[in-house]
Image (cartoon, rainbow, N blue to C red; front, side):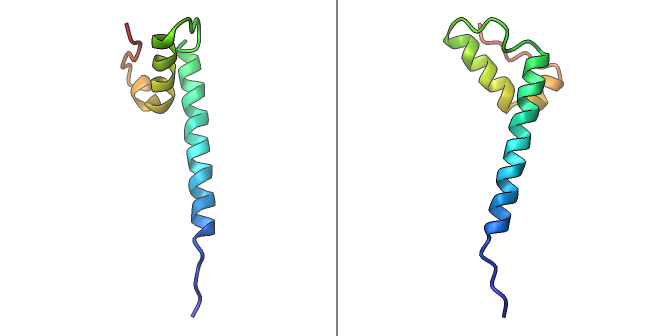
Length: 65
């Protein structure tokens, strides 16, 4: 019998999360969520844009007012 440690799956998961966050940063930057982070609301808007980047591409406004 061959037992797998699952180490490979966790490495792949980490890579996928890193790619997801990198794409989120690129999308959020292209939609100006990082421009002028002056207060906590702007910071939260930028974090939400990175995490929820598919919504940003669907033209959902994540700027907190």
